[in-house]
Image 1 (tube, rainbow over the protein chains, first blue to last red):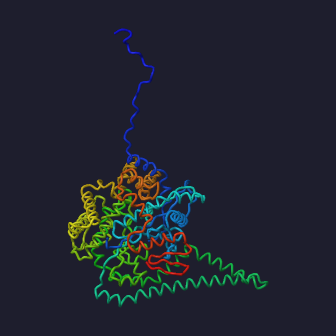
Image 2 (cartoon, chains in turn red, yellow):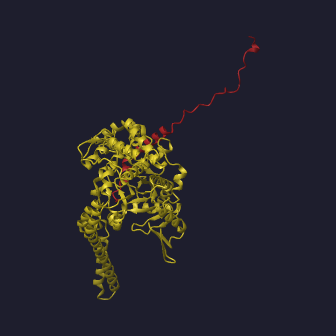
Image 3 (cartoon, each protein chain N blue to C red):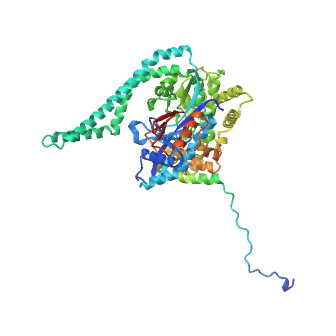
Length: 56
Length: 564
């Protein structure tokens, strides 16, 4: 191989395929959000949603 | 067109979760006013000319504030569907109410925040709270109930002895109460007018102050509770007597044959509940509150499966062949398919009873025992002892009713019936194989799985049970998180877990969005609902001139009543 045949190093950045996001599991995301919310001030929520009134 | 009118009355809890612990919260009565104003801004509405007030909507349905006089400030929002033709239409109008309330949730929350309340609005569809207060989603079915000569005779003889004295006792009590208030008001005015007189004025001024402080004491909640208790005590003997009479006279055969269906249908329409020990899911919010089969629902300690109270309000209806059967043992569902089945299967069993289709008497040995077994058995395997000495599981009883309904309807069932039969079979077969298969369709299964997944870091159900057994702060927070899931699963609006699962495709929507949307604005198909809904739409900009009741439009100028 002569000197001229050697590949010339490119000055451009190599073309890399963009990272492919894993398929979004909407149900898992919803449950994760629910888990976070359920553990946020649960005692306050339970107390505030007690309704001694009513009457069918 | 489906021959039976069906309606559903659903109660929603109204609450406010303040942003900071100890922050200010509006009372449910104030929240109701804001929600009603938001509804009126969203859809056509007219003031309701009914005792509890509220507004009728363009659907022909009613929304109002539901509270006993003694606890007036802490009541519930009640939404009643219009009279619908058949179970599918009733289920659609029922869930359209959720859609409507969900759509205006943000607006109502915003209005409350502008009044200085910092926090979140809760419109809860669960039929109970974590403290065990219970309400529900009551079903009304128009039932064919021809009376035998003996029953007519019994009614003719005993009716005047109970109902008339009951109403007289109530009226005398109310008259005394109103007279007392009128006398107090007149005395106050007299004293206040004479108080400025020189020399003689001083005792009158003291009298006016005394009357005023007496008035303040009388309107306090505990005084009203005592007055209500007094009314209750005065009328109780007649209520009990009338109750015995009604149980003999109002669809006794239909109630006997339908009852086993109503407590075993929980296997597919139970909303699920975090049981008191925190260890597992129970099937129903309402089940622990049910005490007996039928009667006039007069106090919370004696809730019946069948409420006969409408025969106190409308005594003449006991004489008609087609009567309103009110089922009080009914939970609210977030799953739309569960509501379709709740109403659809009950309608089918009623159709068999009305047509005289032979059905086995599956009466339980003890109703309380049977309800407790079904409610506390998510494995669906415990046998229920029956009055005839045999025992069946809830699934076996349901399968019996399904097979009889399939025989009764034959192969040429019209589409709505065929749909209910097919879904009924589908859920029973799946429940028999593995309830988990129905995590998208059955509320109690969805809730059981959700608690297990959302609290996986805490050990799932076992972790909650362990936490319930300890007295630590962390343990209390874990139990409260499970209870929050129990309640918030049914919440209407952007923070409801059931809605989030539906959006994420983790539960089945059943109805099309546009169909539900139409059912928030257009009247149901029954002639009376349509006439009422049309009247609301026609006069909704003219609230001072028109009001609507279940049966008529009332106009002021010219004064006119138009019956639907």
